[in-house]
Length: 78
Image (cartoon, rainbow, N blue to C red; front, top):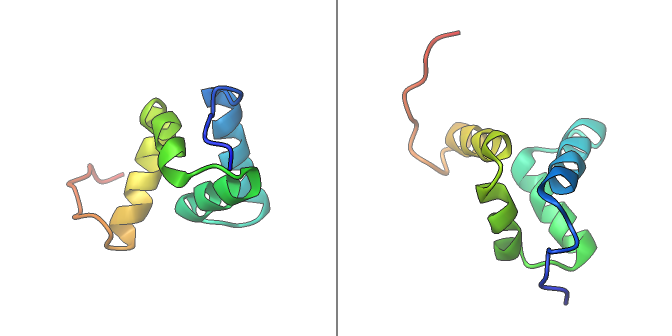
């Protein structure tokens, strides 16, 4: 199993995840898991890329709150 994500930049990783979300109609969490399974990467290893990308991190956090995996945070009404 490949454990090194140095070959994948944050931009490439984000594009791949966004592509999976929109083309395969996946949730962000599912897209990350699918990406890791396809590339033979441990999910915890991909977390380092997610931590460094505020947009992707916020999307996953919002999704996790909607699924009640995380406590809801207050948000401004839009």
